[in-house]
Image 1: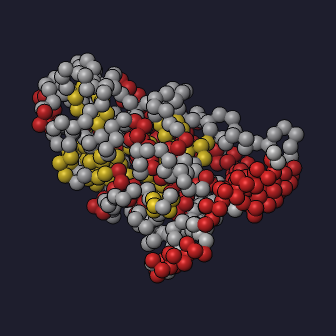
Image 2 (image 1 turned 135 degrees about the horizontal axis):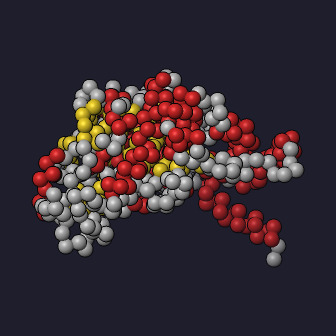
Image 3 (image 1 turned 180 degrees about the vertical axis):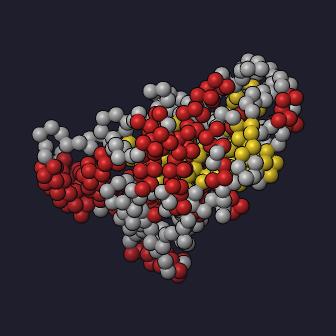
Length: 488
C-alpha cells in the first residue's frame, strides 16, 4: 500500500463531491431555475476578517455587545417580577387552571403538591417610572432609568443544556453557530489584534460550580472556526500557549510562523479546504495577541475611582467584577462581542440564602459596567444584555417555610434587561399573570430577543444567513420579531 496514493484518493473522493456543487453544471442549472441567482452576493461569501459585504443592512445603533449571562436561571420572582398578591397564597396549591397541563421537570413532577412560595424579599420603586426592583439588587435599582426590563421572555426548553444551547445558538440541538460567532461572521472585527468574540468565565468563591458550560456555546458550528469565541483564562496565560516556549525568541516565532504559512498555503492550493486559511489566520492572530492580550488584562492603569466603582473583587482575576471591567476594556478596544458567564444560579433549594450571595456578586459590577461605559461615551454604541436561559416557578420545590424555599425551572416567562445603543431606558415591557406563570401581555420569545440584538447592530435577522447542507440557516431560525417598543 502506498500511503501517498491513498491520501490522494481520499482527497479526490472527498473534494469531488464538495466542489461539484459549485461547478459549471450547477451554476448553469441554477441560472435556468432562478435567473436572479447571480443578482446579488450570497451572505455565505464573507470576506476574511471584515464581515459580509452589505452588512450592516442599515445604520446601526450598536457597534458591539456585552452579554452578561446568568447561567442556571435567576428567579424573576425574587428579583424583578413583583407579585404582592401571592403573600395571601402562601402554601396554597397552584391552581390547575394556571398551570393548564403545562410541562414541568422530573424534579418536581413527582411532588404531591405544588405549594406557592411568595418571595420573601421587599420590592421598592425606583427611577422616574417607579420600576419595581428587589431589595437584593440595590445597585441595579439605581440605574433602572438606563434599562429596558423585559418581563415576558419565554422559551420552549425546560432543562438547562437545551435551554442555554437554544438561547445561545437559536436551536436546542448542538451544532449551530453561537450568537457571538454570527456577529463575527456578519460584521467582522474592529481590531485586528484581538478576536471579534471573547468569552470570560467568572468564579464564585474561587471556583466555578453549577451547570457545566460547553465550548459549543461559544463555538462557530458550521461557520469557519475563526469565528468561534476565544476564552480568556484567569490564571496563567490569559490564552493557552500565548507565551513563547522557553528558548524561543519573538523573532524565531515569527520565522516559524512564516514558514508554516508557506506550508499551509501549499496545502490549500492542493485541496482547497477553507479551514486551512482559517488556521493561517488564527496563527497570525495568536502572534498579535502576544502583545495585545497582556496589555488588555493589565489593569494597573485604572484609576482608584474606577476600581472602587466595581467593588472589592475587581482586582481578583476571574471574579465577575474583574470580568465586567475586562468587558469594558474589550469594548474600548473594539471587540465586537464579549460574553461574561457566571454560574450557580440554579436554586432548587435554599434559594433565599443563595440568591442573596449571587446578587451580592453581580449587583455592583453590573451597575459599574453600565455607568463606566456611560461615563466614557461608550454606552451610546454598546449594547449590554443581562439574563439567563429561563426563569423559576412560583411553586416551591422541596420543603416550604416562611424563611426558606426552592424553585424549579420555568420557561414560560422570565426577565432580562438591556441597556445602551438605542434601547429606551426606564422601560418595563410585558406583564405576567398574578402567579408569574403565564404571560398576560407582550410576549418576547428568545428569537425575538436575538432579532432585537441584531437589529441594534444594523442587521436584518432574516437576511444574515449561511447555506449549510442545502438550507439557509440564521440565528433566529425561521422566527423572530424585533421588539420595537423597547427601542428609543
